[in-house]
Length: 404
Ligand code: CTP
Image (cartoon, rainbow, N blue to C red):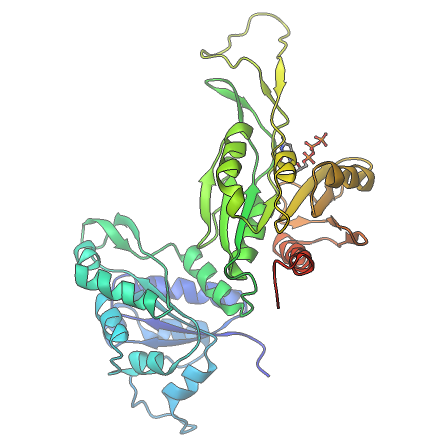
């Protein structure tokens, strides 16, 4: 049985071909086996030796390369592929693959492969915006392929516009997500909140907290990888939004509440991982507050409790998961919060524990539900997120929201 997922990476002729080398290196560091197939034109932009050094495999260019084991190489690779990604994908190769042309090693293997396929176009703006290319890209999607849309920016030809290869982190997300075969959350809508809120004090100051949004983002990443349609309602964060996740930025508690009020009805699952400020300045100043006296008192006004609102308005077949951050009596406080806010699940952590809480890449949590509390050891936030999803999925099954 093979241990590592096999990613077949098709590289076509375009200036962005050099970025495929960085992507290859990133995937190998994530413990993936990468097989590279290049078009002849791609070899004009970057040498096969670069990929061979990174992957420790021969790069395939011609269908008629002689191979030692005499296997039908393109069929053997197509069968082994867990994911087939073309990065960058030129207009020419896109046109060929949507029409089933197979006239070189890349297009032949691509046609023979039945695994998930990811296409990352990169080309000059006019070529990209040409209705022929747009129609072809539409066809890729109709055939069920994932298209990681290019960005706008400065292109090698000197133009500024769309057609720039998507960010490599987004492409990497799309590839790793495609390796996860269980799409148990497909057709499910998930809304997750993440990050802090910022409450304005004057034009230069605000009240906020140390949340970075990492836990909510890890939950969003996993939900997307499991096939859900995911919306992330987030406060001011610096973290990258995962590939394919819809993002709504809400700086304050009030704006976060409004975003939830607009969206919550469509959600099968809501996870409230944001660190919402409990209070805001009652009378924010429109001018900078000047220093005069030795002390200054602020009057704060209570913010709406968004999770409590969601708990009140929860539909019978909706699953609601809250978080609780405590510094003392974690279990008692968190258990009371779960009841008071009508949550199916509540994930509690003690900020005083080393490895838990804000800004870390790890967390130590206890998951509370109608069953016994589940205490998890210190784990990466991605793994904590996966465990939380296991529990949410089990509640979804109990509620009949998921039938499988
Ligand atoms: N929460 C919320 N709106 C608020 C405050 C909190 O939606 N105004 C949510 C958080 O997103 C989290 C849960 O409520 O899912 C618990 O948040 P936490 O800060 O632990 O507790 P609080 O309810 O604010 O109570 P306290 O600050 O007294 O511990």
